[in-house]
Image 1 (tube, rainbow, N blue to C red):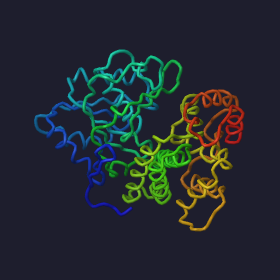
Image 2 (image 1 turned 90 degrees about the horizontal axis):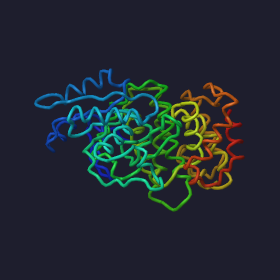
Image 3 (image 1 turned 180 degrees about the horizontal axis):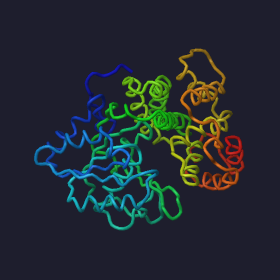
Image 4 (image 1 turned 180 degrees about the vertical axis):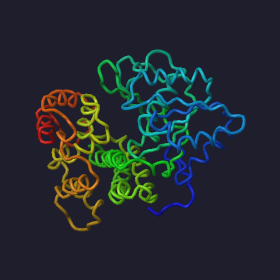
Length: 386
């Protein structure tokens, strides 16, 4: 992708301002709409960084009253949402600015949902029998992603864990989508190499699994395949050359494209990754990165032509290739960017594998997988990855 000199605007369907410096338009955007008391939702790691302090200083000028909620760390949990709702009310906020990676943006969505909706957050869990409707006002909120992984800034769901069971709950509604996205790749320049690698593998996995997911959706297929191409050209560069703004821009775009595409569905890799986050609190992107080549091997015989298309996207090859060439490329990429090859490399214990299988079997993502994945299949996948 050509490096943009100035941000560009487009809708898909969220209004997006994309490019270096996009963050500088937030204050004027909100002021034009009459907002004066934003609550910035971010994580505690970002809250102390110069890039965040610079942003808050910029939007705190004039007659604005700005507050920050930074009580987010690790995988989002319900107590963080409850605390964020209280912070909104104490501040008498009139809008929310989500500033961060997938965790902060998911919590921001859950906060704006619960400002005016009654009951418990998990009353709104997707497909819950007797679940409550999304029928109350949702405060205006905007999103500024600071990582290129989940693409939560353009997503319509929030993933929040139950602290009692540690199970991830999906809160889904198009009404949760940000009203405006400010996608500024400059916000990702200071990411450590390990974070760039794991979030980048998350974005790539979204694109790959949505392309492989069963069902008819050529629009998502096209978006996913282009996202794979962008990530293939820029993921390793963004890790090895952290200030390479072109690579960072490509990865931010690939991240958004993956999140748009996976409305088609995901697959077995994500079911494995969700299990690893639930059982071992492993970072979601890292879990996807470790598992992707092991899990996708299960799908080779079901859609070899799709794997050939993926290899052509990452290699530029015009020749027909074997379906396994793409898995070989994934293994090489992981080695280049420091993603561990096996679960034992990140401290997973052999005795945890049964519980991992239990959780993966119950995860909804593999229902869209191009090949049925049984309990016995998950046992084989986790054993091979271990």
